[in-house]
Length: 185
Image 1 (cartoon, rainbow, N blue to C red):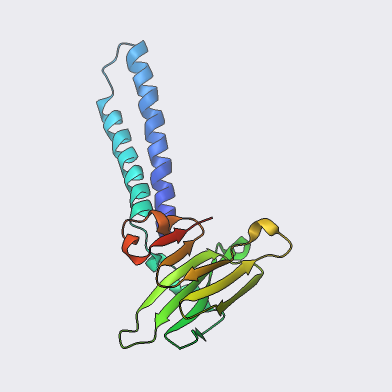
Image 2 (cartoon, rainbow, N blue to C red):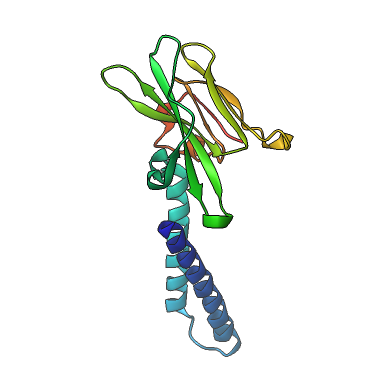
């Protein structure tokens, strides 16, 4: 949340700097004043910082940014048929009283390494459940029966596929090695 507020402050400051630069540029042209180099430098610096933050959030996204302090346990644990994997769902509250709830599903490999990876992340709907189709395929139901456009249900091969409703994981250069196919809404 603090990161978002800092980004908003940076964005607003950059917009103001660009407006001030354009105002001073107009003055320099109409009143034959010197070119506003300092305003140009400040505006360009702000624009580069905003672009850098956006590019970083897009191409270096990981599920580690999930607010695990505010998480609530969801359905699970649910073991795969031969108990190779365990699926757990968690809920993340966001936005305070007027906010909503995100849901994510983590798969734990029940071997000595005990690797945990997130394979599903979406806005939580009214009807959420999980069940194993076979050893490697998890069916996740996440929909609101009263709103057909809200269905975020999917069958995922836990070794090769992930789902991120917003698509950030699908664009992330950091996460490319963690899946073969990434789905987004």
